[in-house]
Length: 169
Image (tube, rainbow, N blue to C red; front, side):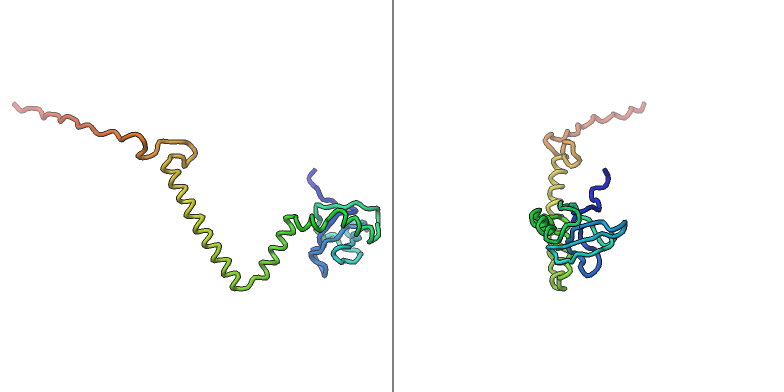
């Protein structure tokens, strides 16, 4: 099945637009093809209608009766520990890292750039050292080969006997 996240009662979503942008809500009911009734008991979003193109569906879903009250939604939300699950998700971590990055000052950005430069220099130096030893061992391209100047001594060139020039008569 190609789709995993459906617009359904109990689906947790993130608001992508408007005054409550970035807050978690739960879908309470589907009004029509383009609008749903939402409620955000833990994120202080009041119950109301919202367009589907203003929501990003998450993988989380809670189960409660059809068109449940805010109190019922809040209880199932806390029982399912949606806030903890959301904070551990990769999506939430990316959002928080973007927020941290947006709060950086010029000096913080400078320090970050210098730290990356140092890290990359160390990484490159260690990679080149490993590549050099692999090349000397003969394991650079995956197969064990005879190293240049390895264990066997190089054969010495034997002196060829000089051909004598033909004698003139």
